[in-house]
Length: 404
Image (cartoon, rainbow, N blue to C red):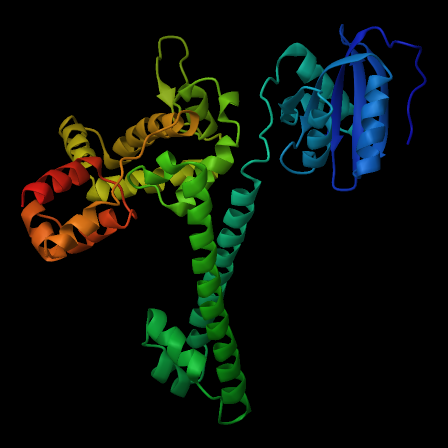
């Protein structure tokens, strides 16, 4: 650990800055007028965090600490600092123009984080740990999907170059039929045939294992997300994956986002002003959390395909001359507004547990209910089981079944 020698400044207000890494973190201290006081390097251990906090406290009253990577390398220090009552501010890394001008090193980045906390350029509180379990399940589920996709692609490309007998037998099969057939085969034949069939069998079994793993993780994720925010999970078109992603993006303390416009900007769906001179226009945002942007896109697609109100809105926008891409952008912005309400306020989810018992008590089939409302039986079944939400349909269903 190296540090500059400084005079006793215990009575003054100071600001801290932290540049975090996997094994070390660099801590800098500045005065309330921006003067550099000291910097030092510490290990990313409990003892290192304690020493870093003692180092900050030794230079004065700590008013705020700017930390880069509060949800990654700086997560441990952030927890330690907040547990000791220090305000922690999430700091983005300096932009490229500034880095080209002043260079880059751990002390430079740490002092830049401290100045960001002092100036107010960084003002966002870091996410808390209440959604850490959902984040872990979500990351595991996504990695299972990526690994499964990679295995399926390997099977496809391996069949392209396989011997003709293997291509003819398995090349025409699709989906689960091909995976099941390859997982059951017994490699025989010459050396080449045996090797290729062994590889295909191994990949197919990997696909089946990853599919089962993803289903189990999704079920656990659904339970966690539903328990944490039932209003968000019950919103139309919001599945376990999209609900988890929005919760991870917002964090367990969404009050750190002051307005729904800030949440829209965080998700990359807020139009960015791009006016100059006589030109007055907005452009599409390319910033924000792209995973959250993708989640809003999937919700928009679900609603476009099956939500009557969304389809009517899309028809009106189409008549007004807008393209499908423009309509989806408008929908994503409106959905972000709705998701912000679900994330920041308690949304009451109407009960549906009484629907199935009432139907069964009167010996009414799912098909009869579906025919009455002009929907598929699957729609009524999913509504009864709480897998999808449609408050208008549930209300009409309850009124009808009580008078049937």
